[in-house]
Amino acid sequence: MSTIKTKNIQHPSATEPALVMNPDGTFNATMDDVVAQSLNGGTFSFRNKLINGTFDIWQRGSNFSVAGYTADRWYGDQTTAKTRVFGPQGQTYGMSLSGATTLVQSIELPLVGKAGEFYNGSTWVLSWYSTTDTFTPNVEFRDATVDAGGVAVTTGTPVAVETVGIWTRYKAEVTIDQDPLGTSECLSVLLASSGATSIAGVQFEKGGLTELEHRPLSADLALCQRYFQKMPILFLYPVAVNNPLVVSAHVVLRPSMRIGPTFNGTNTRANGVGFGNLTTDGFSIGATASQADASAYFQDITLDAEL
Picture 1: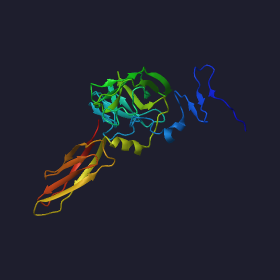
Picture 2: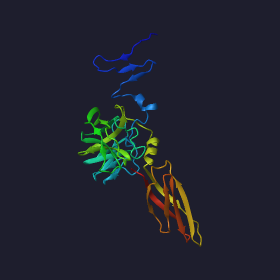
Picture 3: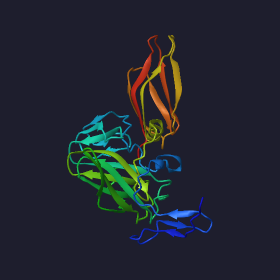
C-alpha cells in the first residue's frame, strides 16, 4: 500500500483544481453537472425542492381542460388539455399539453417574507425532460401561485443535456439575485410552453445538475397532502328515534395541512348534514335528524390548502 501526498488535483486544461485537500485530511470537491446513482440516497435525498417532480401523484384526476391544478402541486394557467402520459425510460409519468400553457409550482418559504435556503446569492439548477424545445423557464418570489406581482430572479437560457428516446433533458441555471418581498410566501417555478408538447422529470436543486431524484410514492404523496387531500365518502348514520338527534364526529387529517383547508363535497341528504371547525389537523362533520331514515353522507370530498 502506498500514499500519495498532494495538496490539489487539477486537470491540465482546467483553471481551478477539482479537489482541494485540507490540512486535516478532508477535501473540497468542485462538481458541476454530476451523474451519480449514489446521489439518489443517503444525505443526498430530497435534493429536488419540487414536490411530485416525477408526476407520479394525480389526486384530482388524469385529464384536465380548464385552468387550475392538475397533477399534484402543478398549476396550469390555460384551458388547453393537460393529460397524464408515460414519461421517458426510468420515470413513471409525465404530462401532455395540447397547446401553449404555463405550468407553475410554488415552493413554500419557511416564513412569509423570509427566503430561507433561497437566499440572495445562491445558485440553483432547474431541469426537465420534454419532447420539444418549447419551454421558457422563469423563477420568482410570489405571494401566491396565481400572482402577477412577483419578484423575478435571473434564470438562464435552457441548454440540452441528454436525449432519452423522444425525450430531451434541458437545464437552466438560476441565480437568486433578489430578496423576497415582505409578503412573499413562496418561490414559484414557471415553465411556459409556446405550443403542444409533453413534460416530465422536473427538478429544482441547489448547485449543479444531478440525476432525477425518485422518491418513494408514499413520501411524495404525504408531501402533496400537506396542500391537497381527497376523500371518497364520509358516512354518518343516526339511529331511528322519535326526537331530533345530533350525531357528530371529528375527522383527523394526517399529514397535517399547510393551513385550515377549504372544504368541498357533495351532501347527499337534506337532513342537516354539515361540517365545521376546519383546522390544519382536521374538521368536524355532523347531522341532525328526526326520522328513522336519517342516514347521511358526503362524497367527493376535497380539502384544499394550496399556496
